[in-house]
Image (tube, rainbow, N blue to C red; front, top):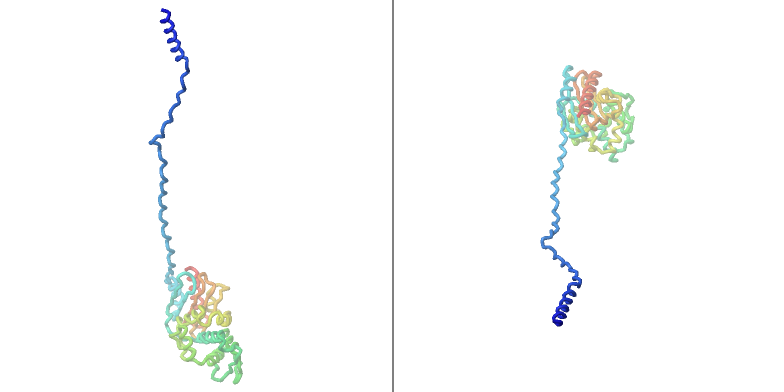
Length: 314
């Protein structure tokens, strides 16, 4: 009996010992990385910029119609019954152009034959081919009534002095002496034709057209008749002359007008380079066969004013 009780007690003690031992702390196992984790998305390219349109080209300037000028000039001349030739060459402004009415009609050149003579002399002086201080002596065949009456056989004058008398005072004898010194009428016409005056017979027959006079001055103004040196010599001679009642009278005060007039009986002519306009320089030649004298000059001035107004508005 005793042995049974002891064995039972020992067995029970071992069991109690097991119950009293603390349980080992359990360590949670690491979770493996999930295969379903999100992968960062690749950068999406920006959409292309819209194409830049080609710039719209600037439209070419369009010259306004000359119709209004034609109407204005007809209103000036028609009541007088004057035969007229007008030639306009624009040298500045947008879409520069040219226009004429009666511009190709031959008319008496009067003293405008002196224009190509003065231009040729200026070109020769600028090129150093003639000396403006060189002298030309008067011959009886040179004489024609005019501004000066101091010519006597054997009297000599410098080319510069003759040029001033011819340009500023339109003296006829001085003009004849210059033409003779330049080689005569044929040589003068050869020179003028080379600058575009191909429908003229200056000096002897002495006919020209408004178109030819305008072409001569356009050649001068654009440097084709000796360039800046020739202009520097010529322009002062043909500015503020004794005959300012034509084209210069039709433009505002202070406008520089380089011009040559010609008057004979009912004929009043004026050919000019007009500067300081709104659209730059232009050339204007006006030939009239009508009332003559002061009335003819007034007619030229009115045409000049109409052209100035047209040029200012274009």
